Image 1 (cartoon, rainbow, N blue to C red):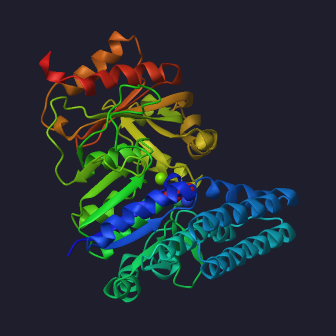
Image 2 (cartoon, rainbow, N blue to C red):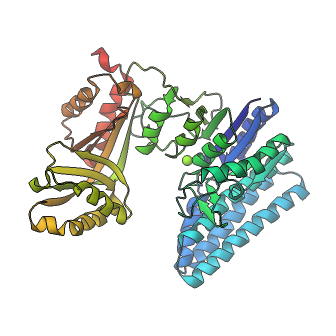
Image 3 (cartoon, helix red, strand yellow):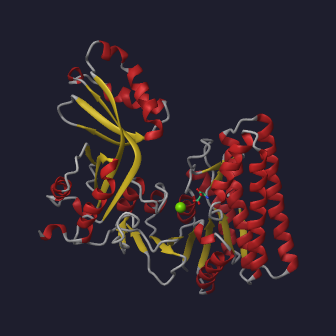
Length: 472
Ligand code: ASP
Ligand code: MG
């Protein structure tokens, strides 16, 4: 028997009208005899609303969080009003919504008193979005005669206590899914599970990072041995580039796990970057599809990528980054400089997105998000005070307003001339390339250019994904 996990993102469950589409999709699969698990996001905008309210509460801005409470109640009540005819059923669900909104108000009130938003309380507040959406969706399905059952993923996904970006404990998660979720499928139910959230072994609620519902769905699909994972979203699939930059962008019919991993890491908003790992491990095909255009096949993501005449399949970019360069002729042959630089970077909580070093060893550079870039520069300067004094290191420079561009395509491996073509294209556009990196996987090439050249560079590179590269 087919067993499918389906994840529905915020826009797919934004309103009663959108949820009706979701219900149609679920019903179609469920009633043709598949076992289906649905993982849902919060209604669009709710997670942002909750974060804003939590911050406001800690700053004593009461009217902001009280207004948020009203919005939460209204938006969920509206869905129930539209989709649940039966008064008694609706009242039960409305009672659940009211209890969760009361929990929200209680937490915000407490934040006002302590005047400090800890990551732990932040997670507890953010989790309310998915706890609310899953309940109203499950009720709407039951009202439509589908045997749906709501589950909080706090019962299913066990994590460490790294709040707001928790790491999953796979073995414990597997045990919970075997014990709680699989029996529901055996009973013929359609579980509606909260995305985004988990729980520590001690019982604190955690979240998996913004956009984390994709990852929740992948974890659940893997642990419940699904035949397929479908991520339902608001675009037709994974695209060759960002259509807001180049409207010629088109949907890719098939990409590999590795390719989509590079795309997700380097800025394509289509999937949470951790999504691929659990399904890749169990070789479960993943499909990205559009709730608002369910006839479209979407993009299939599996171990093999479709052969592509263009070799380069997609182009992505990450802006709001800064490039740090550590340079000095005295660095040559001195072990440990890069190691110390990366540790100093980690200590100020900055994540490194790209690294490059030339073999002269006279400098190396790396890219971090620009909100941490100055902190990293200071950390490097103090880490290397001695080396700077002795002129072993001459500069710790920060270049701001840059962007990482990445071209992706697994066919690059073993195809000579792709990098040449990419950089010739930049040359023809008179765009200066500041730094270059290629992973040993040879599935992508990343490089840094100035933000001013961002769109022009993407459009020029995207040409390469539209036309056969080697034809020339
Ligand atoms: N609701 C969460 C967010 O907006 C998780 C998700 O939708 O994936 O980040
Ligand atoms: Mg998302």
